Length: 347
Length: 263
Image (cartoon, rainbow over the protein chains, first blue to last red):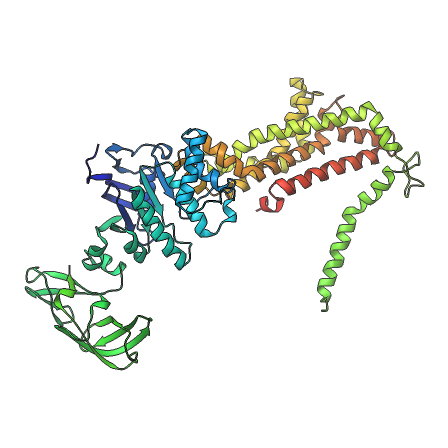
């Protein structure tokens, strides 16, 4: 069995095609014991297919899935001991809340008194005591979500899979549920895979994020790593707001963008290397080593910040966020901003 | 607020259609309570005599029981065949599926009289004429399309993620079927079973050919009209109408509405 710190869930070279469409192109990843890994990607990126392969609802064409050192690639879903929360919750509409939560225990032939005790415990964990006799349709969306969660954890599963579970909730409730899921997952030490297309949600919840696109994993890294040091254009663009340019290293620490503009950066890439350059909008200050001045073509007030779109002389269009202080610069106004070399990510 | 004339016309048209549909009932009900010894409308007086005649006649009672258990057996067999067939048609991917899909509805397309003659020829050889179970077999064929139509509609709307959830939570295929799929299909099953029952309980053409001496209620009524026209037939009709109405109410209450399954 696995030693502490090593991979609990191991996905190795998993491939899946549907006709001509490659849904998964030799995907490999590891999730450590107790870790929450988010698979982030747009729809059609293959993230749901990957989750189905782990849950056993899809059989991969190639590769292996291992949990705690035991291969499960060919096991039917019922034998995998995986708790899953579906996008639409998939609560059994004909069963009460208590019967829904008891379902996985009954399937495991747990004794009646034990079932009652564990159902009560699980419902207490998701703060749904007193709702035992209700039917799913008599609950609000958030409550249904909690029942689905209780049902997924009540049998102490080896893994927890969450398939875009917050999509149907309003913003406020979504934030509450995110924190609650995170708290519960930590407390139970459950190895968890979370699927979402919402990059903000991914940043809030995850230990690490795997960004997927077109059936391949673009980057797996911690949340800060993904945001600060994306591996490529896709990740930089998909996670957060960004200004992405391309250019060539002209000397160590110096990039010439394709438009001709030179920038000071921190990078040890050799001269002549083709590189991507990422500048996050919030990293701009009123002044800095690299100065840009330009005309405001669009300005939006966002409460805590201003969002400005600048057309710079002889150069690129920039998205800039500034703390909301003073008056919102009007369209047509001239603004100068700067950015330090260490705030620019070169990839 | 003034009702637009087009709407008033619609109400009148609907009222007329409704009246037309109800007309037989409006005649049959009073006649069944008639004190006259023959069919007469309006009846000269009221009495229960025709109901008494029905209840006291072992032939009528016999025919009623036979129709009831033939209907029940038909419903059971039609469900036993139709439900697996509907599953295969909706979920299966096999050669000839489309053909079978069309064939399953053939019994409603082929004229009943043709079917009856054909079945008569076959059953004569098999010595099934005049047996109650022969009639059950023939009625099951006729009832099958109703069952298939209703269950197919129910399965098309079925949320399969519920079955995936059950399997993911540790349920075997069999327990998923018995604990999740069938309970959720119950309204469709109820509708299908009761429709199959009614289709057999009301059926006369096949019964004329196959029943022989084993009278079913519709066949007895038919014979009764041919032989001796007396208002007993009206009393029987009223009770038959009441029974079918009760069944239809049950479908409305516990089953899936026909308007859903027509989709």
